[in-house]
Image: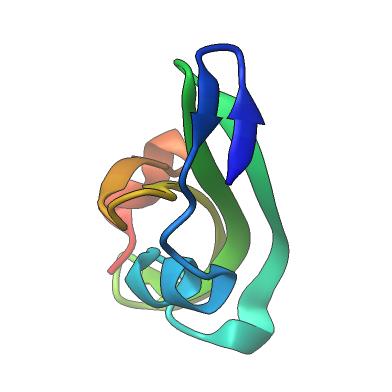
Length: 88
């Protein structure tokens, strides 16, 4: 259970499960995982890097932050750099 401003909420998902559904596929690329409260719900904030290619040519590392609901395991949001649509 996690104490939130709305009372105690269950945390049904383990950090490893949150990493599994995040946009960062490799456990070694995870920089930080944090359990916190957002909108009166417990969420995991998973920050890491993802290797990609800019315009299919230049190798780059994307900084990705994925927010995962700690009760259900659903992905809430994914934050990437604005230019990530050019990377594949």
